Length: 400
Image (tube, rainbow, N blue to C red; front, top):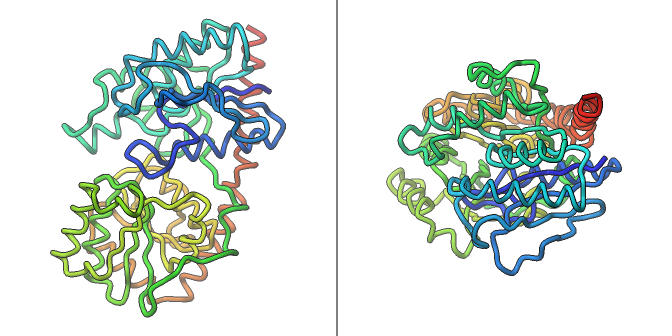
């Protein structure tokens, strides 16, 4: 099949770790590669955010990235992109009519969905939606700090009721969409995946400080990721260090406002000597960082899916995660890791301290996590499941 991926703000070519560059970028890149590996031709459409970018960039065999001219050719916060989605949709429709016509179009994020729905209807192309995050959840947790456009929730409700199929990534998302009035019959549960050839328990290990257990967290440097809770918890976990991967480049990470906030908190908590901000790490080095950890902690206040616990599990590393969103699907409490309530540094500290002191439990969690990652979440399996969805909606469109 010819599969169009639309990811308006999250290019698969972007450097990860920025405010708007994270799990969605990785998801689109890995899914596209997995689909290509099964014989499909994939085009990823993302907004041109630089004047010097070529229109088409090959990303591998059968995969190319198309930079769509919509809005100024410069980096913009994703919450400012809505006014440019009409232009994005018109460009897509023109490209599909006159050039590369897809068999199915798969939108990632709600603004991509708006552009994809308009272009798909204009070209009689079946359309599939993955939200990656929902406005109802963001507004519930961020309140007045939510910078999403006012129309977001209404648009997501419309997309959920109108798209040919909505791909939900976890059971928590099903409940959210049902409460928004989206019929369950329009949803298909297909989680995100993990590259089990890259993320495994075998290979190089990042250097460690001698004499300290390592707690690793991989997160963008934004408040909702809950890194401050980990810093506070560290006060009650003696003999352990906290390494934070994510944010700007290592030589610039201390210039980041939130990084300075974390370091100031570490000083107040008297754990500054045991907190390291590693900054952004090249993607190919991430497995070595996971392997270096005794425990990987993922402590967001809310999380639509969460790739880092899955990558840690694939590397055979036990996980401590907050009991929110998609983490309750990927991490099996007491089997592949431990789940803790969000916003609870005391409970987090107790759980980390107990797990770091129990080598047998850590080994068992790690082995079970690796098994679960390979059996359920390996990208070839996810690509097969999505291919079934694509084929179904394409056949329905052909009948209509």
